[in-house]
Structures are given as C-alpha cells and as structure tokens.
Image (cartoon, rainbow, N blue to C red; front, side, top):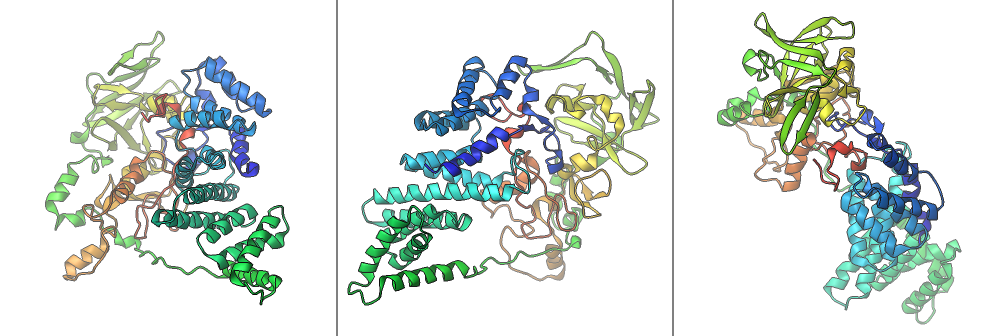
Length: 587
C-alpha cells in the first residue's frame, strides 16, 4: 500500500477548518472562509460531536467517533464528512472493504471530493478493482482541475499538494489499465489499454519524478507493449538508484539485454549506461509547443449592445425584453415592480417561513418597523430607521432583476452603489430580507441593520456587478473592491455571451470576410458543442465560480479568444448548508 500518498488527503482533512461560504456572495477569493460549517449546526450536541470528528486521534479512535456520529445523527446534513472520516480511518487501519463502503456513502452525497477520490482510487487499484479505479481516478483528475484549493490548504502550498494528488490519481489509473490489459487477450482492446496506461503513468512520472514505483510500473507497461528500449531506459534509472525496487529492475534489464544482445557483443553495463543516457536526454528535451496562441482583443473590441441593433434588430429587441437586459437598469418609474404604496413596510422581528410551497410572514412578538418603501415627489425611495433612531431616506437609483425578485440600489454622492437589504418577491407579493433567506447563519448581510455601514458587504460593485453587469473592470488593475470598479454596460449585454464584436462589426462595415471557428467571437451558439455552450453560461450561473483578475483589471471578461475563461469552483463542501438538500442535491 502506498501509504505516503494515501495519507495526503487524510492529513489535510484532519486539519480542515471547514469554511462555509455565504452562497449568495459574489464568488470571490476574498469572500471565502466567512464561517465554519459547524456554526450552521443548531443542535449543540450534534455540533460538539461533529467537531470531535476532526480532533486528531489514533485511526481507531477516529473510526469510533465517526461511526458513533453516524449512529446518533442519521438525519444530519453533515453525513458526507462523517462517512469520509470513517473511510480514511478504515484505510489507515487496513480495513479496505469497509473503508471503500464508507467512501461510497460519502461520495454519494458529495461526489466532487478529490481529496477523498484519490485515496479511494489508490485502494481500489491495490485490490484490482480496475474499472472503479479508473472511474474514480478520472473524477479526481477532473475535480482537481475544476476546483480551487480547499480552505485547509494555504494558497502557496496548494500547487505542490495538487501536483502530488494528480500524480497519485494518474498512477492508480495507469496501474488499473495495465492490469486490464494483462487480463485481456492480444488485440485492439489490449493495445488501447496499454497506450492509455503508458500515458497515465508518463503523466504521473512527470508530476512526481522522484517516485521510483511510478517509473518501475511505466517500465513494465513499455515492456509489455514491446517497447524494449523505452523500458530499458525506465528500468535503468531505478537500477542505478539502488532502492528496494532495484533488484527487480535489474532482472528486467537483464531480460531485455538478452533479448537485444543475444551474443553479448555489448557489455551489460554499457547497455545500462546507454539506456540511462536515453532516459536523461528524453527528460531534458524541451517540449514542443503545439497550441496556437490565443487571439488578443483590445479593450476597444467591445462595442456594446447598441452596435448590434443595426443588423440584428429583431434579436436585439428580444434581448432588450429579456431578463438579461434587465439585470441592472438605471431608475425609471415604469421599471419598478415592488409595492411602494400599500404593503410597503418591513418589520424586524418577523419570521419568514417557506413550507409546502407557500411563503408566509409570521409577526414577531417584539417587531419593530425598519423600512418603508414610498413614493415621494414622483420618486421611489427607501426610508430606513437607523441606529441613531432617526429615519433616513434614500432614492432608488437602480432596479435589479424583474422575474422572481426585484432588488433596488442607491448611488451615494461618492459614486458607490449599495443594494438595499429589503427586496420585493414578485411571486409572493411581499417585501423580504432576501439575504437572510439564502446566506449562512451569522452572515453579515443577514441582519439588515448592518446595511447602514455601507461597506463591501452591500456594495453593488464589489458583490453583485460581476454577474449583473457587462465588462466589469478595476481601473487600477486590482481585484474586487468598493471603489475603482467600472462597467461598460448595465445588465448582461450581447458581448458577455458572444464575446467582443469589434472584428465582426468592422467586417460587416467594410464588406470583408474572415474565416474563424464557431467559438471565436462572436460565438455561434448553433455550432459549438454543449460544453462550450454551458461554459459561457456558467461564467455567471455557476454559483461556485471563483473569479480571477485579468492583467488589466478585467473581472468578468477577457481579452482573449476564450473570452469567458474557465473559472475554478469553490469546493462544494465549503458552501453554506442552505445551498443543499440533506441528500447532497443543490437547492
């Protein structure tokens, strides 16, 4: 058993603080680790037992704690974590069958967990569960590319940890494919498995060149594939190292030597040296770049939606009537959908309840009037009672949304835009504290009284604009903050989905033509595959996407051909539990 690699995830897991993200916050690195998920457990007994799961102890004690938690709290929202602790402790105790069953239960609830998938694939490979190994290794490799570092790992450490995890997953996959090939009669299927095995093992070796076991298995695959010289190069490196696998490598080298030099006209040591030299040359040989560098578009390549109207009038009008265009609109009385005349008050202390498909507000025993939404001087306004016990009036300068819920924002004299904490639910015809409904317990925004601080938690630019406006940019080249952020167009314009239109407009204007792929801007959605299609939508609709910052401060777009980017995701295990049903499905 490759204990060192199998324990990587175990050690990380025991150190995990389990950060819980407020699921409605903008997906920014700065917004992570708001609270621990243990804070979301209302039952103090369950919370204490849950925290006990992550206090370091012997594997036997860890397994006992996990099994006790599963027995005492079978309806817990944190079963995935408990099953994971049980699985890891079982692996450490070499109880592989029960460990795999615990892991299966954990992954059934939270499948996207590479820190568990990697040791699972390792155990399965040792037990010759080849199909399962390949499936779990592939899932782990996909997730390692798709998700950001868990909050338990410091940013500077994650690249090395990720590399080792990828190496372990690739090694497990390579072993399993080799075993499948050895169990398959000669033919196309066997050759295909051997090729795939060699690719996986070569990748593992590239990521973890110091692991001689990877190199040894790679040599076996090459030998089985009839690549005697390549196999000799792999075995020579191990033979020279003098480690515990060196005698096996020597036996294989001698077999290859007899095959290639039956008359022994080349001394064995010379043969080994030649193989070692080939290995060194191959390792030092620079890789040839084969990818075409992406096209770069200047800031002026984004022309805005109005430019599209001249040639695409009907499409433009459909867009203008859609929710995309209405994500953020400057104030206009006809755009306001909330009740500012009759049911226009919001009380602190009332309890919102959504049960059996019905929403209701239960008046609290100590309710106090917090906000009045009124029309004053032909202007929609929010009157808010603040901590000085005085009423303060703010004009509505923007409307946000128009389909299920409408939010409102005001622009301060300093240019900051802040979103009011009270929103209007169009389905229920009621004013609600929307952030309390979706944010995790203890969230700063859940208490509407914190709004008067007018800080980053309610800033439209820092929190909302990334998905509600187009071509958002920090003019100072920095990240998400309250100031210095500007957007080219309110709402989601044509170029957020189709990409920069500058070249296309010039082509149409000048009467020229240039050939391009369907996914080059402007993207032709009828000709791209489903993954590209979803990736473009996911830049805003993938709640867990973590935004990076472009070289010029771009925050939700890019100057490159792949203008929508490929943002990594927040680990799902770190989301507020309000984001999920107990069986793991997203709400």
